[in-house]
Image (cartoon, rainbow, N blue to C red; front, top):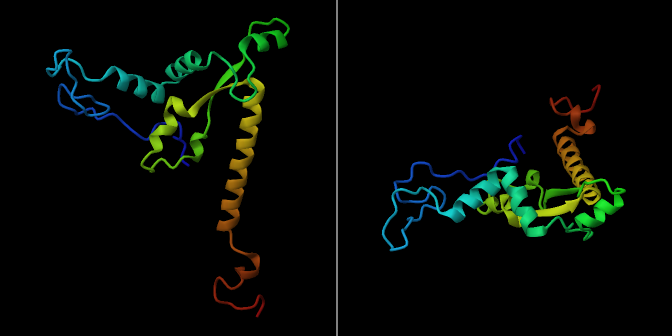
Length: 167
């Protein structure tokens, strides 16, 4: 995957005509049902766009949804403060359930991995363990790719049609 795995695969359509949402393309209507040419986005579409593109917005929505409770072990911010000898640190991390590096950005439904549905709250220890597992998996995938690209030493002498080595 290229270095832009954190960037969502979907961009707004900035050239929508007035009165159409730049995200979904649907008409934006006033409460009376008439077109609203003064607005460029539906409020829900702004939220979806900002969660996908701005880490602060994603964290804010995640905090409101999960209240800092770890999705893996169930620890709460109060538990974690107590475990840190009273030091004020709720110690939670926003984590992608499916890591973004593993997503096929060209898939039709790829954008869903950049939404709140693919985010979870993890305490620091659970996040470190999950990150270590994912790093090991990614390293194994990269090693396997390198091995499949390098020629078999037994066949290397025949790459140039020389037959047996030294013949």
